[in-house]
Image 1 (tube, helix red, strand yellow):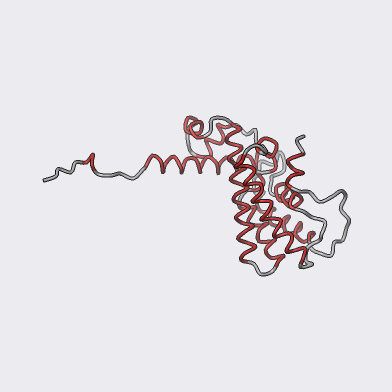
Image 2: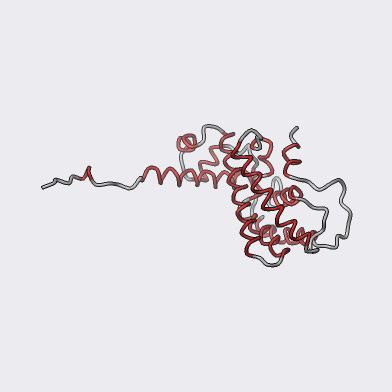
Length: 217
């Protein structure tokens, strides 16, 4: 008769699952911290928010550059998914734009703008793929809204992303206390300003994500 010992009983990959959850917690905590304090937030603070030790953080991310890169990827991929879902689900063009904008806030898109210069490496295939996906998804929403005549025509993807990131970041020195209650109000004011017909003429030309990448040059 076969003697089945405890050692022979398969166990779920607990350590791998725990490691995955820790990585997700660290990335999420870093998104929040960067929104509030910028990309130079102390890594000790990120670890504290994630509920992990510093050693755990460094096992997943060897340095700040790697962590910031992962935050940028996470934000872009999440925002792109939101844009794709909104475009597919909303029959009204401007409703799709509004849905994306408010859901992008939930993805903490405010973390994206301050990390652009350190995370947007054109030689990085993952970053380029995430950038292209976000550009394409948001451009599709904007194009549909503009073609329907509901959105002013002098706006491009970069304009929308910059506005969303700035509107969802706390003012310096405010400590972020209660800031969230203002975000939806200010975001709705901005979206109202995107409706056609335009009531003003914007200086310069519409911004793309490529323009944002070139800001550091």
